[in-house]
Structure formats: C-alpha cells, structure tokens
Image (cartoon, rainbow, N blue to C red; front, side, top):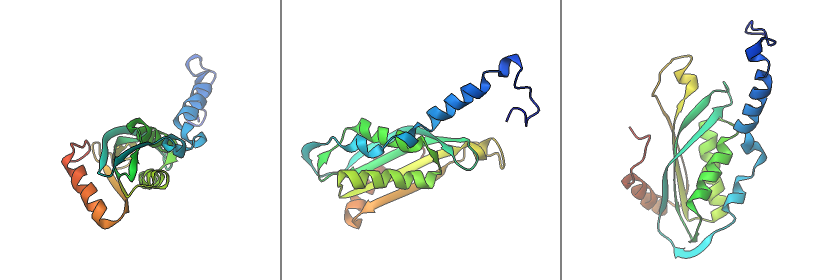
Length: 175
C-alpha cells in the first residue's frame, strides 16, 4: 500500500508501519475469532417478564466495502421469559459482532438474532444509529449524517410494548 502511494517503505517513520497495521487489523477484526453467544450463557432467574432496555451502547465497526469505520450507538430492548442477562453481556455481544468486517444492516440483524436465539425472549428490538466515515471522509462528504437500522423479533403485541418503552428512554442518535 505504501509503495502504491509513492512512499518509500524503508523510510525511517514507515519501517514498522506494516507491522503496526497488521496488529491494528488483528484488533479491529478480533470478533471473527469469538462466538457472541458465549456471553449469553449465564442468565439469572428473576421471574421478570417486562421490558428490559439497554440504551446508548457505543460501538464502532469497519465497513467491509471501504475498510473505513462507522460508529454510533446501539439500543437493545428485550422482553425476558423470566430469565435476565447482565447488561454488560449485551455490550459484549455488540462488541464481538461489530469487530468484524461489517455492514450496519447485517450487524443489526446479527445482534437481534443472537439475543433471541440465546435468551429465549418473548421479543427483542435492536436500534442502531451510526455515522459512516465513507460518507464523511470521501464520496458525498456529509459529516453528521447517520444511517439508522432496526431489527425486531417476536409477537406484535409484545413488540408494541417494547417499542413504547424504548421510546420513553433517552436514546442518543435520535434526531
């Protein structure tokens, strides 16, 4: 890459750049080596059946089309079937799935499917709002614009209550 830009990779400041970039990408894509379902194995029987919302979970990912970051917030709501999971475990699911070459639409779907598939919830709703650097730094150059994606699973009546509860929460990324 350095050579294609017309740079001298043997120049003093660039000699270790290939190693640093390899380490960077290993860290950015560490989610490829993790199973997000593992974070949802431990649950607690609390006999809780009402909505649980974890809002404003910050995240970043790398767009697989341009290898540029997109970053924003994920909001997760679910209706447990009596058993709940630690809130930090939902954040770990998001971190694992976002640390892969991604597109936001797939990420949103993967998060909701991981929650529903492993927590046996009555319903789950995931809302993602993110700014994409491929729109900010290149192309149309529109900083501050956000892509919003939503994925939901469950019966319509339970989802309605979940949506109402989420709308009451103070969520970043809503404009």
